[in-house]
Length: 352
Ligand code: AFP
Image (cartoon, rainbow, N blue to C red; front, side):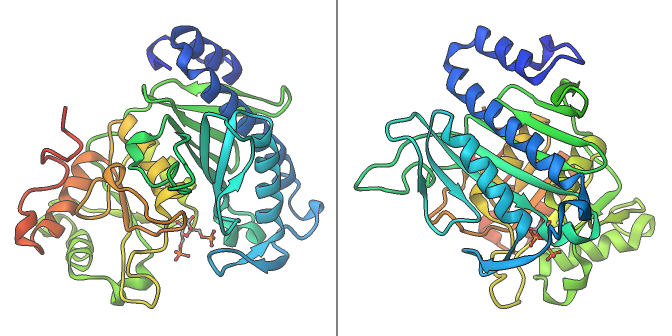
């Protein structure tokens, strides 16, 4: 939806109706987003009760990740899956399910979703989230993962929910990134940020510094230069944040800039980092680019990368365009063949 014409305070439903009136091809996408918003409100109300809702961090089975599922992981997965079953969605790729879930045969859309991201924060009252990307259905008997293996540029919409002090619904339909805030009395999301524009550079980086000894050379060199501050080559002092919740870090970057890094490292199983391409990196990358920011894996634009499996991991670096380009230069130095920054080559963000 064109953010330019959206009025602050409008409900998400009204904004979606306006988008569909302007572009009828968004009708099915709008239904999926409305379904996600309804599920998000229900999940937010459970989270908002904290320990009064029971032990939300209670541990259960292992998921596809090998991570132990928590009560809230399962609840969120069930709430969003049920909501999507009532929308024009044929397939869902969820972090909490091993394979692709088939919902409505013949429906036009497919959804990649992390129903509850940041679950290690649940038991300690810290922000958690839901992340989703909406794509056209493209699977076939010959290519059962076809809806999910194309590049992130195929996403028709992307969003995340931050269950924090306020509950935010961050959304893009390909024409700008908006933020809606939950009006708990009305049980509806209302537009509070009609068009996010991320500052080109800032003085804040987010990385889990406890992994420093495992990082590869470009990341070590970049962080060392950040730590050298104004006396070092980056000529500015930095602050650091690490919230352990991708959506919370992403929302901070959208609102005050900076750069987030979850690189690959030499721990077992972390060569491609920790975050998932399909239902974490690609939706976040679309939201960032629609807000004038960038998202790379160090050497490639995230939205250019096609998944080979629904739970594939990818190194993720996103944020203020100049800060992301700065990180890319550190990677660029490692591989002579990648002499130019991926942000500005013909396959980079700045292509037409
Ligand atoms: P959990 O869902 O297991 O808490 O992981 C959260 C997350 O996927 C993402 O939200 C954080 O940015 C990142 O992992 C934190 O990873 P570390 O715990 O390795 O710092």
